Length: 184
Image 1 (tube, one colour):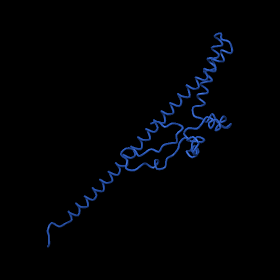
Image 2 (cartoon, rainbow, N blue to C red; image 1 turned 60 degrees about the vertical axis):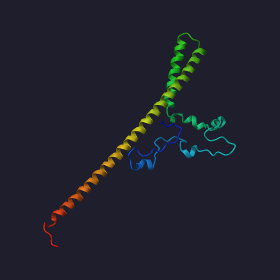
Image 3 (cartoon, one colour; image 1 turned 90 degrees about the horizontal axis):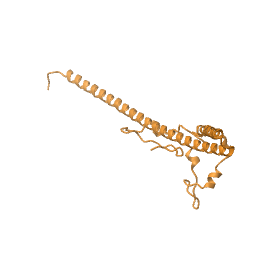
Image 4 (cartoon, rainbow, N blue to C red; image 1 turned 135 degrees about the horizontal axis):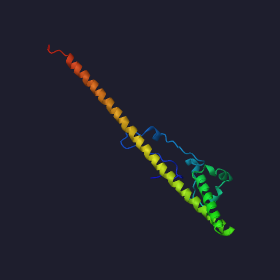
């Protein structure tokens, strides 16, 4: 159950064995905030005759592109790494093809397609790594929540046992204070 980067964060339930949800589940926090990632920013009003918000058209997608988006490419996760990998792959393959005796247009074609394939491959690899890290962090948080709930129940159990022992001791002291004879 890996969360996609395009989905808003999901609220987790209480860990197994917990009597009440931990504090952070009552007040969920978003750790990565990117422009336009708030659910209210992504909400689109759908009316009759328009497509549903989950299926935007290509023209709507193109119209949503702003010039400012190209200035903030470095803020997109994995974009920098994938572009640098593509540039390196394109330069290496293009130069290699040219040195091996290929003409400039052919070497340029090889360089472009190497850049394109290298960028996409690095992008997908980086996204898969991020998804695995996100799943691992979610699992760690779940385990920590369970440990905290177990620790809380253990502390409550110890407190209950101490209280019972104190009550038992008071009863024993009261019984010991009673006289061995009876006046009726």
